[in-house]
Image 1 (cartoon, rainbow, N blue to C red):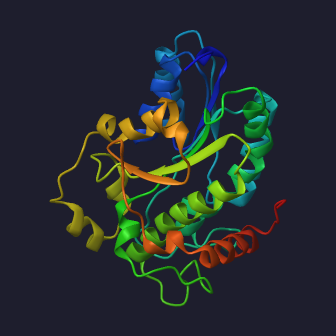
Image 2 (cartoon, rainbow, N blue to C red; image 1 turned 180 degrees about the horizontal axis):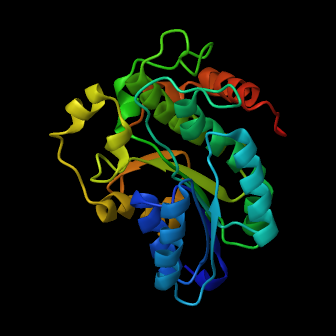
Length: 290
């Protein structure tokens, strides 16, 4: 892809795992990488690694917790202070909890970190993404969500209680957040029609990283014997979606190992997508232009 050195990539959840691998790969292509992480020590260490791999590009590392809407707002402002365009946004940050945790803002931490924070950050960065799209080839400006096959395993999402507070289960909450990633991808694709911006979601599959150490004992037991890919293998599709030509020719897709995959059936329900967007806006406490 042309003019790679002038392009800006924002990568959330880049302090470890596939996010760090993806940020490092984009930095090695000479891009200006703006990466985010939550843990102070891991974020600082990752910044050093990503900068060491950079080929003439700039690397900025920001710290914030996307389960907090105030942090999502602040990160958007800090990114806007660093650049007037974003060519690629990788919404990779996410996680899993082993119990119900409410944030200081009154949101369920799992759903907030996996969906609401990325939802808010993306909407706040849309002016920078549209600025990049104004002088870039159609399909080269991209928003990518890291979802999970776990979203395929639940019956659906209760749009009256998307955080699952009525009957909370930590494993289900994670799956619901990953289903939300898919619904967001499809709904966002429709809203961005005609802008030249495309959006996709991917699943890395079970990955040998720190991820499962934060899960409930039940989830750890279920996943302990599953075959797991390396962090580099898990990040491959994420990097491919951000940089390859083929993903720029479509939008709203779901991918694994560079191949299209069928998402949850709810993703094709237009009424669900519209209600989901409205309920997401309510939870983050703001509205966005139509």
